[in-house]
Length: 435
Image (cartoon, rainbow, N blue to C red):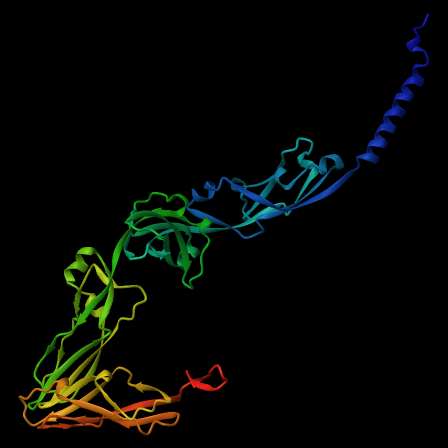
């Protein structure tokens, strides 16, 4: 007697096949197979030492990313991201055409290599002779220390030079190596880290990822950084400027004055160097008045004086120009400065506002035949008559000078007077009154 499960066996098998086909049809409808593009997937280069071992370097001359075309079921594709793929170029597989085949793997095990198309399928490189040269490192300071200080000295701990290795063409283009150190708001000597940057001969930054940087002893510099010792100097203001004068003027003339503009200067230096000045800086070049018979002006550069000091300099952005004025007068000539407050004013119009130029003092030049005589401001009487200044305008008014016996005025003294009407304000009755 046959078992009931074996009855109509062929019919049952046919039913199973039909069901399986129906399931496949439904699955293809609900979860179809399709393709998806993943763009700009980066290429990872491995085994680069296989090139450096033959004393060469490589340069990628094709795109450093690829496009991946993945063909899979929709349920799998929808879960994929660019980060699931790893594209590698193994330089051990570099061929005679200087191309490296690319391989790709996917972190999702549902995706096999034969379901991925890589475009392009290889990476093009260029081999170049490797070169190593030594370069001096310049230090660039950014930022400002605390008020009252400036950077006095900087020194790289690892040494003044670095060794740079890379493609020969790149090393031939290097113009400058700079270590940039930030000193913002520091108030004492410090050791700070500085990043190295390489610039070509046009001043443009070069790519550091193709260069290997070592210190002067051959130790590889981590992240291309060096340590810099920063020494701060003190800022000291109002240091007097002085100049030495030598020689003797022509007979019958004498030196009557020496003035330096500016009169003071601000310097930066160590405390010891600043204290040694005693509050005064004497200009290096002496000025000779030998056989001179007239006044003259000499322009000087303060940096020439400071060049003799190792631990002093001008404050940043200070003008190094200095003007020295030498006054030479004939014996018996005198130049006196009289404050305007000593001036006797006559007939000043009450309804006018008056301003004077010069505003503070006037210079009076007098002569005496007695070369040994002396005259002071107290010996001179000066007055001015403003009777002409009754209308608005500018007036050039002579100053009357009265001198002691034996003295004569060598040049006329004048004041420029600006007259303006006083502002009149209305009183309580609407009448105008002077302000």
